[in-house]
Length: 81
Image 1 (cartoon, rainbow, N blue to C red):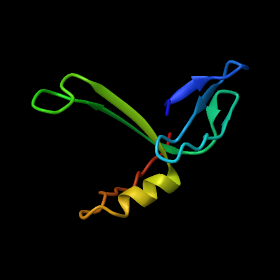
Image 2 (image 1 turned 180 degrees about the vertical axis):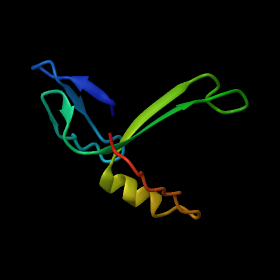
Image 3 (image 1 turned 180 degrees about the horizontal axis):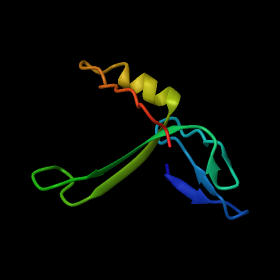
Image 4 (image 1 turned 120 degrees about the vertical axis):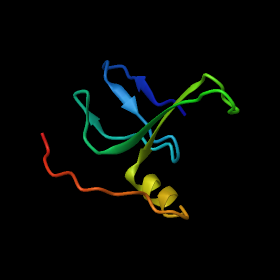
């Protein structure tokens, strides 16, 4: 699944890489939050020097992280700019 594609109107269509759902974008602005990950693999991995990127919608993020043996570290942001 592609991370994002340009549609006929010139806007980006963004998809959840797990479930494939198209995320809501209006006038080039993502209207729902999503988890975006980027990993630059180093040596001694199966993906030496490759860069991997993906998006997860909130539902897929919840589903995947709920299976973690060690929970996600959560900190509260004190100020939003």
